[in-house]
Image 1 (tube, rainbow, N blue to C red):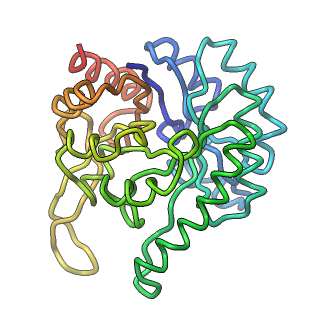
Image 2: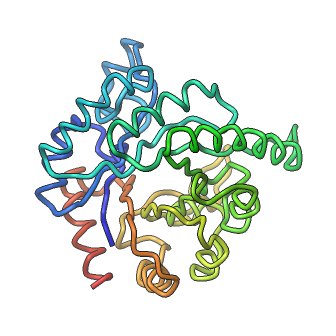
Length: 284
């Protein structure tokens, strides 16, 4: 098993600061957040945050130009580039997807994230499914051209929140070029299936595992008190990591698991250290 960190989870660190800490604590690789960098002065003046003013992010518009520099930085700190985690969808401009694949190839990175479509009740599932098939057909051709795999994430709010739904889409394609990211926290929000069965369903399409935790708590939603999902520390949520890693071992998965921790009880530095120690004890 290899361990990586998705840099979305360390928003106040620069990429190099994050790599230094990751190497110190024993990680093997990094998944870089790649998206548009905000230019709004109000956002840039905010405290660092996961999805707005995130300093551990590379600009998608320049990612191919920055690729040699990023590769050198990771080689300097002895970490592998496991993935470029973009927020592109399969229906987005193919030139943007190609730019990220080109960058990954330069870096020696084998995969980028290209997500599926969000569910829209106005369109309905069947139409969105066909659009996703059409989109990933184009993405697969780019993956063949660049020799870089495109993975979509099992994510709440999309048409692939579960292993079953993800497999239905992925099975249209060659697993050498299109894969699935299983996410242990997202499935608490939506799409949870028996762990081993989920991994068996995905089969050869299971290309990466994201690990984080979540729980359902009572809080106010749209003016009403009700149960709703929220992020949780690794040791205090609903994801059963002992069963998860046992199931991964039983299906023969021995590749990267990528850490994301959106809980607020510890600093990013503390989470980097403590989460890895917690998971290594379980795996051991």
